[in-house]
Amino acid sequence: MKLPISAKVQLTLTHPRTAFNTLRDALFGVGGLSYPRVIDLFVTERCNFACAMCHVKDSMGKNAGSGDLPFGYVIKIVEESKRWGSAFQVIGGEPTLYPKLLETLNLISASRMPSGMTTNGLRLEEFAQDIVQSGLNFLAVSLDGWDEQSQKLRGKVNGSFDKIIKGVEAVLRHRGRNRFPIVRIGHSGNKKQLYELA
Image (cartoon, rainbow, N blue to C red; front, side):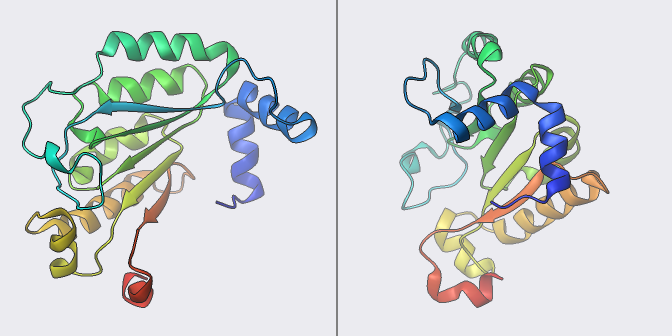
């Protein structure tokens, strides 16, 4: 994703160690690194969708706590990563089902490391204000449908299209004039419907 210069400057000032690593890697390459530059933090296996293309499609309706990453591990991983300035991508399952999601985002932000999150957007509206206030830098919302019917085919959830749209709008409303989180809509397998998706 191409960022405007002003966003790059803000990210550099907010996450100086990560910025230094990015510059170092550009100049000298990434060979011989002793710690990952990007960490995919898989916080839960649970999901409220059942998308055919997803590896957790059978997790819909799993009990709370089932397949959740213990928060103690999150703390340990973030603490170990501080000195390296790693970037975090919070993923799942569906991260908004993880009971310690906001604590996780706040912890990463307080540690001055950049963070992103990928969500199906179904619960985004109720989390919008807290997500914006957490300091999350990038938010990817998976939206494979272009209307209610096509979206229902994807996740098997009635009314999901409108809920996702309202969730994205809520994030943008709470973000206001701030740059972050940068919101990106992701899709897969619908290249024939790009016009409708746009």
